[in-house]
Length: 442
Ligand code: URA
Image 1 (cartoon, rainbow, N blue to C red):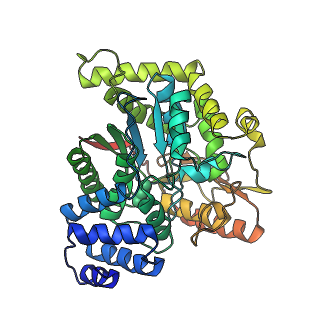
Image 2 (cartoon, protein in one colour; image 1 turned 90 degrees about the vertical axis):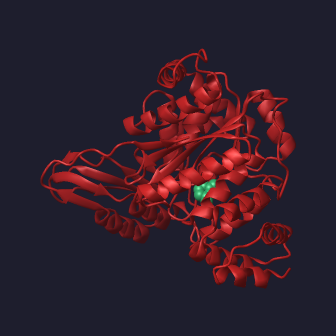
Image 3 (cartoon, rainbow, N blue to C red; image 1 turned 120 degrees about the vertical axis):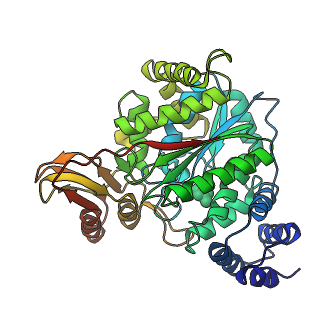
């Protein structure tokens, strides 16, 4: 089977067989198929799409491109979460330690930034020494010893996704339903989760711009999970405006730490509590199983709020950082995290109600400051980014701060300022706030 024939078949709108998908994924993982052919194939999939059957076959081929973990000897029922990608989405940094602090061990494999959306691994690497590349032995050892792991795909777990993910980031092939669904679900299946909470973002700063698209993505992933014997809950959440205030790696780590200390922006804290409550309920940790789902979610939330209030969530985060080689001095005092040389406030040019804060544009501003990549393997500037001081619906007076830009280069700072001002639209009449969540798919 020649790679070029598989590319041509997809380019011309054909449906690939299971064997063709497996051959392509295995060939690319081994290095027999070069990046340029994989890029062409990704673009063909982007334009032609994939059937449900092809998407499931692609997911399983990627999941089995390396080892598939069985965690049952360490965690009787493993849960995991994943976001489809957004701007200011540092949810994992809060949710995972909180859930572990409530007694449910959790090991998570995360990704790097994709396009204008940030990646958990890039955020974590703001912490000096933090190792995202763990071997499977280290992954299992840390889960057994600390109950918590947060790392990248090791070369042995879903390696096909690791390679394709980096290639998609720089070939304009990120926002594709089958590619997103298979990327996420292959990692989750390979990492051994029995139950998964998916945070499917919708809106201007999401890869799925409409609720219909997000629902289709959610349903596809829930179905793939069910076919693979996993329980999956998908929550469709808003990504029209950035989540929380901070966008940019070290700034987001700082905000996550603030939130674990019981402070942090209200929308971000609430978002984390909802996702974490679903994880605890799926794990059967939310008190007794006779509770109806609403009551179980409330019971879970009470546990999570207690872990925030008494510092157990933060203590788990600190333990995670130490276990993976990170410098805890930087998390104990986030002033020690990387800091930008230039910090400039952007003020409101007029008074009015904020009608739009375009999350994608805010993400692009952060990317252009150096917080993300434009080419595969580009270095990242962990210090730079943007603080967004308001939410849609807020009334702002002229001259009040809208954003604070953290930059290391004056020209990039000026470009970010222009972009951020373009990201806003105004209204003279009141604008309702945006919801945090729209739907749940089970
Ligand atoms: N997160 C992933 O892991 N993969 C995607 O394609 C998008 C978000």
